[in-house]
Length: 332
Image (cartoon, rainbow, N blue to C red; front, side, top):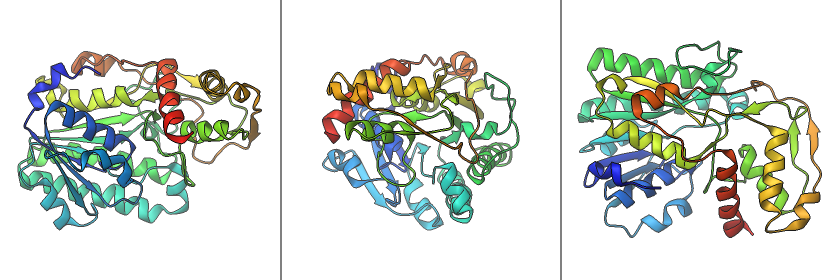
Protein backbone atom coordinates (compact mmCIF):
# COMPACT_ATOMS: atom_id res chain seq x y z
CA UNK A 1 0.00 0.00 0.00
CA UNK A 2 1.30 3.44 -0.95
CA UNK A 3 1.30 5.78 2.04
CA UNK A 4 2.69 8.83 0.22
CA UNK A 5 -0.50 10.85 0.44
CA UNK A 6 -0.69 10.28 4.20
CA UNK A 7 2.74 11.71 5.10
CA UNK A 8 0.94 14.59 6.84
CA UNK A 9 0.48 12.11 9.70
CA UNK A 10 4.25 11.82 10.31
CA UNK A 11 5.03 12.84 13.91
CA UNK A 12 1.31 13.15 14.77
CA UNK A 13 0.12 11.51 17.97
CA UNK A 14 -2.51 8.88 17.19
CA UNK A 15 -4.34 6.58 19.59
CA UNK A 16 -5.62 3.25 18.28
CA UNK A 17 -8.00 1.55 20.71
CA UNK A 18 -8.16 -2.18 20.22
CA UNK A 19 -4.75 -1.82 18.62
CA UNK A 20 -3.80 -5.43 19.33
CA UNK A 21 -6.81 -6.71 17.42
CA UNK A 22 -7.09 -7.71 13.79
CA UNK A 23 -8.01 -4.33 12.32
CA UNK A 24 -6.30 -2.28 15.02
CA UNK A 25 -2.90 -3.93 14.59
CA UNK A 26 -3.01 -3.35 10.84
CA UNK A 27 -3.75 0.33 11.50
CA UNK A 28 -0.88 0.52 13.99
CA UNK A 29 1.49 -1.02 11.44
CA UNK A 30 0.45 1.43 8.72
CA UNK A 31 0.74 4.46 10.99
CA UNK A 32 4.22 3.45 12.17
CA UNK A 33 5.33 3.08 8.55
CA UNK A 34 4.12 6.62 7.92
CA UNK A 35 6.10 7.89 10.91
CA UNK A 36 3.31 8.67 13.37
CA UNK A 37 3.62 8.32 17.12
CA UNK A 38 1.19 5.54 17.93
CA UNK A 39 -0.40 4.61 21.25
CA UNK A 40 -2.24 1.30 21.48
CA UNK A 41 -4.93 0.81 24.13
CA UNK A 42 -6.06 -2.80 24.53
CA UNK A 43 -7.23 -5.12 27.31
CA UNK A 44 -6.45 -8.23 25.22
CA UNK A 45 -9.99 -9.59 25.62
CA UNK A 46 -10.07 -10.33 21.89
CA UNK A 47 -6.75 -8.87 20.73
CA UNK A 48 -3.41 -10.65 20.95
CA UNK A 49 0.04 -9.54 22.06
CA UNK A 50 1.62 -11.40 19.16
CA UNK A 51 -0.20 -8.99 16.79
CA UNK A 52 1.80 -6.06 18.18
CA UNK A 53 4.96 -7.97 19.05
CA UNK A 54 6.93 -6.52 16.10
CA UNK A 55 6.08 -2.96 17.21
CA UNK A 56 7.12 -3.18 20.87
CA UNK A 57 10.72 -2.22 20.07
CA UNK A 58 9.67 0.78 17.95
CA UNK A 59 10.40 4.03 19.77
CA UNK A 60 7.28 5.55 18.19
CA UNK A 61 5.01 2.89 19.68
CA UNK A 62 3.48 2.89 23.15
CA UNK A 63 1.25 0.22 24.70
CA UNK A 64 -1.34 0.93 27.38
CA UNK A 65 -2.92 -2.22 28.73
CA UNK A 66 -6.35 -1.19 29.90
CA UNK A 67 -10.11 -1.32 29.41
CA UNK A 68 -12.29 1.31 27.71
CA UNK A 69 -14.91 0.64 30.38
CA UNK A 70 -12.65 2.57 32.75
CA UNK A 71 -12.90 6.33 32.16
CA UNK A 72 -9.57 7.10 33.87
CA UNK A 73 -7.80 4.75 31.48
CA UNK A 74 -9.50 6.45 28.53
CA UNK A 75 -8.45 9.87 29.82
CA UNK A 76 -4.85 8.72 30.17
CA UNK A 77 -4.81 7.24 26.69
CA UNK A 78 -6.33 10.32 25.02
CA UNK A 79 -4.06 12.86 26.68
CA UNK A 80 -1.91 14.63 24.09
CA UNK A 81 -3.40 12.76 21.13
CA UNK A 82 -4.13 14.48 17.83
CA UNK A 83 -6.41 11.75 16.51
CA UNK A 84 -8.23 8.69 17.79
CA UNK A 85 -8.96 5.59 15.73
CA UNK A 86 -11.46 3.75 17.92
CA UNK A 87 -11.54 0.06 17.06
CA UNK A 88 -12.07 -1.45 20.51
CA UNK A 89 -15.34 -3.36 20.73
CA UNK A 90 -16.84 -6.75 21.36
CA UNK A 91 -17.73 -7.98 17.91
CA UNK A 92 -19.96 -10.86 16.81
CA UNK A 93 -23.72 -11.02 16.50
CA UNK A 94 -23.94 -14.48 18.17
CA UNK A 95 -21.83 -13.30 21.14
CA UNK A 96 -24.17 -10.34 21.69
CA UNK A 97 -27.22 -12.62 21.59
CA UNK A 98 -25.71 -14.88 24.24
CA UNK A 99 -24.41 -12.02 26.41
CA UNK A 100 -26.05 -8.69 25.51
CA UNK A 101 -25.04 -7.01 28.78
CA UNK A 102 -21.28 -7.28 28.22
CA UNK A 103 -21.61 -6.25 24.58
CA UNK A 104 -23.50 -3.15 25.71
CA UNK A 105 -20.98 -2.34 28.46
CA UNK A 106 -18.05 -2.45 26.05
CA UNK A 107 -19.64 -1.13 22.88
CA UNK A 108 -21.87 1.59 24.36
CA UNK A 109 -20.51 2.56 27.80
CA UNK A 110 -16.92 2.09 26.64
CA UNK A 111 -17.60 4.09 23.48
CA UNK A 112 -19.12 6.91 25.53
CA UNK A 113 -16.06 6.92 27.82
CA UNK A 114 -13.83 7.31 24.78
CA UNK A 115 -15.92 10.17 23.38
CA UNK A 116 -15.79 12.00 26.72
CA UNK A 117 -12.05 11.43 27.06
CA UNK A 118 -11.41 12.58 23.47
CA UNK A 119 -13.53 15.68 24.00
CA UNK A 120 -11.79 16.59 27.24
CA UNK A 121 -8.33 15.99 25.70
CA UNK A 122 -9.06 18.28 22.74
CA UNK A 123 -8.63 15.51 20.16
CA UNK A 124 -8.95 16.93 16.64
CA UNK A 125 -10.86 14.04 15.12
CA UNK A 126 -12.43 10.84 16.40
CA UNK A 127 -12.77 8.08 13.80
CA UNK A 128 -14.63 4.98 14.93
CA UNK A 129 -15.54 1.50 13.75
CA UNK A 130 -19.22 1.42 12.92
CA UNK A 131 -20.92 -1.62 11.41
CA UNK A 132 -22.94 -2.77 8.44
CA UNK A 133 -25.19 -4.52 10.98
CA UNK A 134 -26.79 -1.11 11.47
CA UNK A 135 -28.77 -1.69 8.26
CA UNK A 136 -30.77 -4.32 10.12
CA UNK A 137 -33.92 -5.52 8.40
CA UNK A 138 -33.68 -3.06 5.53
CA UNK A 139 -33.90 -5.10 2.34
CA UNK A 140 -32.75 -2.30 0.04
CA UNK A 141 -29.65 -3.06 -2.04
CA UNK A 142 -27.14 -1.61 -2.33
CA UNK A 143 -26.96 -0.22 1.20
CA UNK A 144 -26.75 3.56 1.25
CA UNK A 145 -25.79 5.38 4.42
CA UNK A 146 -29.02 7.34 4.81
CA UNK A 147 -31.40 4.34 4.67
CA UNK A 148 -31.30 1.86 7.55
CA UNK A 149 -33.76 -0.59 9.07
CA UNK A 150 -34.39 -1.92 12.56
CA UNK A 151 -31.43 -3.69 14.22
CA UNK A 152 -31.61 -7.48 14.32
CA UNK A 153 -29.25 -8.13 17.24
CA UNK A 154 -27.96 -6.53 20.45
CA UNK A 155 -24.62 -5.99 18.67
CA UNK A 156 -26.34 -4.05 15.88
CA UNK A 157 -28.11 -1.88 18.46
CA UNK A 158 -24.82 -1.02 20.16
CA UNK A 159 -23.20 0.03 16.89
CA UNK A 160 -26.16 2.21 15.94
CA UNK A 161 -26.06 3.86 19.36
CA UNK A 162 -22.39 4.67 18.65
CA UNK A 163 -23.46 6.66 15.59
CA UNK A 164 -26.11 8.53 17.56
CA UNK A 165 -23.62 9.42 20.31
CA UNK A 166 -21.00 10.54 17.79
CA UNK A 167 -23.46 12.84 16.05
CA UNK A 168 -24.59 14.22 19.40
CA UNK A 169 -21.02 14.92 20.53
CA UNK A 170 -20.42 16.97 17.40
CA UNK A 171 -23.68 18.89 17.76
CA UNK A 172 -23.25 19.43 21.50
CA UNK A 173 -19.48 19.73 22.01
CA UNK A 174 -18.02 20.28 18.55
CA UNK A 175 -16.04 17.01 18.53
CA UNK A 176 -15.42 16.05 14.90
CA UNK A 177 -16.18 12.40 14.26
CA UNK A 178 -16.34 10.01 11.31
CA UNK A 179 -17.96 6.58 11.50
CA UNK A 180 -16.89 3.75 9.20
CA UNK A 181 -19.49 1.05 8.67
CA UNK A 182 -17.31 -1.99 8.14
CA UNK A 183 -18.60 -4.71 5.82
CA UNK A 184 -17.23 -8.20 6.59
CA UNK A 185 -13.58 -7.26 6.90
CA UNK A 186 -10.98 -9.98 6.36
CA UNK A 187 -7.23 -10.35 5.94
CA UNK A 188 -3.91 -10.87 7.69
CA UNK A 189 -4.00 -11.31 11.48
CA UNK A 190 -7.71 -12.13 11.62
CA UNK A 191 -7.99 -14.85 14.27
CA UNK A 192 -9.17 -18.26 13.00
CA UNK A 193 -9.63 -19.62 16.53
CA UNK A 194 -12.33 -19.25 19.13
CA UNK A 195 -16.11 -19.60 19.26
CA UNK A 196 -16.71 -16.36 17.35
CA UNK A 197 -14.11 -16.63 14.60
CA UNK A 198 -15.14 -14.85 11.38
CA UNK A 199 -16.10 -17.01 8.44
CA UNK A 200 -13.03 -16.52 6.21
CA UNK A 201 -10.25 -17.33 8.71
CA UNK A 202 -12.37 -20.16 10.12
CA UNK A 203 -12.89 -21.69 6.67
CA UNK A 204 -9.21 -21.21 5.79
CA UNK A 205 -8.14 -23.08 8.91
CA UNK A 206 -10.63 -25.89 8.25
CA UNK A 207 -9.58 -26.26 4.61
CA UNK A 208 -5.93 -26.36 5.62
CA UNK A 209 -6.77 -29.19 8.04
CA UNK A 210 -8.87 -30.94 5.34
CA UNK A 211 -12.02 -30.44 7.43
CA UNK A 212 -15.37 -29.63 5.82
CA UNK A 213 -16.49 -26.04 6.49
CA UNK A 214 -20.10 -25.59 7.64
CA UNK A 215 -22.16 -23.04 5.74
CA UNK A 216 -25.17 -21.66 7.58
CA UNK A 217 -28.09 -22.17 5.19
CA UNK A 218 -27.90 -23.09 1.52
CA UNK A 219 -24.96 -20.78 0.81
CA UNK A 220 -26.97 -18.23 -1.14
CA UNK A 221 -26.54 -15.54 1.52
CA UNK A 222 -24.13 -12.92 0.22
CA UNK A 223 -21.73 -10.42 1.73
CA UNK A 224 -19.61 -7.49 0.62
CA UNK A 225 -16.33 -9.00 1.83
CA UNK A 226 -13.80 -6.22 2.37
CA UNK A 227 -10.04 -6.75 2.47
CA UNK A 228 -8.11 -5.13 5.31
CA UNK A 229 -6.11 -2.80 3.04
CA UNK A 230 -9.36 -1.12 1.97
CA UNK A 231 -10.22 -0.56 5.64
CA UNK A 232 -6.79 0.87 6.44
CA UNK A 233 -7.15 3.24 3.50
CA UNK A 234 -10.56 4.44 4.72
CA UNK A 235 -9.25 5.12 8.23
CA UNK A 236 -6.28 7.09 6.89
CA UNK A 237 -8.52 9.08 4.55
CA UNK A 238 -10.87 9.82 7.45
CA UNK A 239 -8.18 11.37 9.64
CA UNK A 240 -6.44 13.29 6.84
CA UNK A 241 -9.31 14.66 4.76
CA UNK A 242 -9.46 18.43 4.56
CA UNK A 243 -12.96 18.36 3.12
CA UNK A 244 -15.18 19.92 5.79
CA UNK A 245 -18.25 18.32 4.21
CA UNK A 246 -16.70 14.91 4.84
CA UNK A 247 -16.63 15.33 8.62
CA UNK A 248 -19.34 14.17 11.01
CA UNK A 249 -20.62 11.57 8.58
CA UNK A 250 -20.82 7.79 8.44
CA UNK A 251 -19.43 5.86 5.48
CA UNK A 252 -19.76 2.38 4.12
CA UNK A 253 -16.34 0.77 4.22
CA UNK A 254 -16.56 -1.91 1.60
CA UNK A 255 -15.86 -2.80 -2.02
CA UNK A 256 -19.30 -2.43 -3.58
CA UNK A 257 -19.57 -6.04 -4.71
CA UNK A 258 -21.17 -9.12 -3.17
CA UNK A 259 -20.12 -12.74 -2.95
CA UNK A 260 -22.27 -15.68 -1.86
CA UNK A 261 -20.95 -18.10 0.73
CA UNK A 262 -20.79 -20.80 -1.94
CA UNK A 263 -18.73 -18.52 -4.17
CA UNK A 264 -16.51 -17.70 -1.19
CA UNK A 265 -15.69 -21.36 -0.54
CA UNK A 266 -14.87 -21.80 -4.24
CA UNK A 267 -12.47 -18.85 -4.11
CA UNK A 268 -10.82 -20.16 -0.96
CA UNK A 269 -10.42 -23.59 -2.51
CA UNK A 270 -8.91 -22.09 -5.67
CA UNK A 271 -6.24 -20.11 -3.85
CA UNK A 272 -5.51 -22.63 -1.09
CA UNK A 273 -5.16 -25.52 -3.54
CA UNK A 274 -2.15 -23.78 -5.09
CA UNK A 275 -0.39 -24.67 -1.83
CA UNK A 276 -2.13 -28.01 -1.24
CA UNK A 277 -4.00 -29.60 -4.20
CA UNK A 278 -5.95 -31.91 -1.86
CA UNK A 279 -7.94 -28.92 -0.59
CA UNK A 280 -9.80 -28.76 -3.91
CA UNK A 281 -11.51 -32.04 -2.99
CA UNK A 282 -12.72 -31.02 0.49
CA UNK A 283 -16.53 -31.15 0.67
CA UNK A 284 -18.76 -28.42 2.09
CA UNK A 285 -21.41 -29.05 4.75
CA UNK A 286 -24.62 -27.08 5.27
CA UNK A 287 -26.51 -26.28 8.47
CA UNK A 288 -29.44 -24.08 9.55
CA UNK A 289 -29.44 -20.33 9.08
CA UNK A 290 -28.05 -18.36 12.04
CA UNK A 291 -30.20 -16.06 14.20
CA UNK A 292 -29.68 -12.36 13.58
CA UNK A 293 -28.08 -12.85 10.15
CA UNK A 294 -29.25 -10.72 7.27
CA UNK A 295 -29.61 -12.54 3.93
CA UNK A 296 -27.69 -10.13 1.73
CA UNK A 297 -25.27 -7.29 2.20
CA UNK A 298 -23.99 -5.02 -0.54
CA UNK A 299 -22.64 -1.54 0.02
CA UNK A 300 -22.73 1.55 -2.07
CA UNK A 301 -19.32 3.23 -1.72
CA UNK A 302 -20.36 6.28 -3.74
CA UNK A 303 -20.42 8.56 -0.70
CA UNK A 304 -16.90 7.55 0.35
CA UNK A 305 -15.65 7.96 -3.21
CA UNK A 306 -17.22 11.40 -3.48
CA UNK A 307 -16.34 12.90 -0.09
CA UNK A 308 -13.20 10.98 0.94
CA UNK A 309 -11.75 10.16 -2.52
CA UNK A 310 -11.85 6.47 -1.61
CA UNK A 311 -10.79 3.94 -4.24
CA UNK A 312 -10.85 0.29 -3.10
CA UNK A 313 -7.47 -1.29 -3.83
CA UNK A 314 -8.59 -4.93 -3.44
CA UNK A 315 -11.58 -6.82 -4.78
CA UNK A 316 -12.59 -10.15 -3.20
CA UNK A 317 -10.35 -12.27 -5.43
CA UNK A 318 -7.21 -10.20 -4.88
CA UNK A 319 -7.95 -9.95 -1.17
CA UNK A 320 -8.49 -13.69 -0.76
CA UNK A 321 -5.26 -14.38 -2.65
CA UNK A 322 -3.23 -12.17 -0.28
CA UNK A 323 -5.04 -13.40 2.84
CA UNK A 324 -4.52 -17.05 1.93
CA UNK A 325 -0.83 -16.43 1.34
CA UNK A 326 -0.54 -14.85 4.79
CA UNK A 327 -2.41 -17.67 6.51
CA UNK A 328 -0.35 -20.31 4.74
CA UNK A 329 2.83 -18.62 5.93
CA UNK A 330 1.57 -18.27 9.50
CA UNK A 331 -0.64 -21.30 10.13
CA UNK A 332 0.82 -24.08 8.00
